[in-house]
Image (cartoon, rainbow, N blue to C red):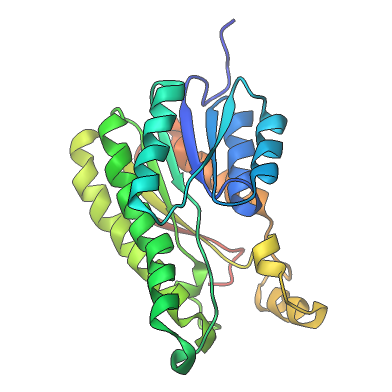
Length: 249
């Protein structure tokens, strides 16, 4: 039967898709008709739960470290082997250790840049040969790259995301020859397990108060913008960083 869903026939790969924003993206892509690869690094049960929610005929969970080039290569190869192609690549996996300058270690810095910068770059490199004209690559930054409210302990994290924004600009030029659109989504404070962890109710209220909307965003609101960028309505959008934050920056 012919499907009227906008992403019917498309195959999407979402890294970090077992929870939080990545999970919301995977579910939204699937609801719009895409088949989805759920990449995860540790929580098999959570990834399997996402596959169960979508349906095993339209999704598969593949474990891979998003900061390892060899595992990224296997992830792409497994995606092509299972679904036969790749149309939408969403590099959502990321880590966010928090330390001020004097406490940042070389190991921490390397880990952040391996997952947040090296990972997306080589993910795009390994995926691009399999992607047809009209395909989409969507990377992830943070609104903290533009917010005056950023605090010193976000040093390594924000530095890595600044690199991703510049990567987006340059990759959009490079992959234009293949007809691949490359964009970046930069969420503001979003109510995920990662964001909420360790924050008091008082701190969360303060963060919500920074936003003119008076609240913290939800993963589904980020997912909606990603799915827009993945669809035909964004056929003339590339090289952009879209700040999805309710007006906080």
